[in-house]
Length: 159
Image (cartoon, rainbow, N blue to C red; front, side, top):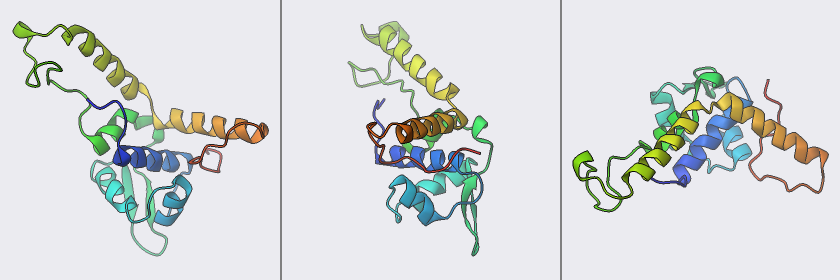
């Protein structure tokens, strides 16, 4: 289990967050510029999101991407797992193989509890919550000029 998102996971979460903050069809270049995602990489991260029904691709001169479901129904866990793969692992930390209950290692109980807590938190965090938190952070930094600017903050209020 990886506790830090790789580039693919980072970009995927940013793209979905942008779509949650900006309902409707958004052009590829708009998403990549606003969220600092390489434009050529965006279709690679959006493809799996479209295939899993999190986003939809709209073709044509007014085409782009949009959420396929309400942001309230899209969890951080499902987006991270689309990008990075399953969060839960049955691999033993000490033995590098499967973790068997009859031969569990000293770390098994503590690691399993921590893993369950992470999965639960990600599964109960929705993109509607994240969009609101992102908007609140953005507006609080706009009010306080001394506050550090976040490099990947979208610019609009979540409608």
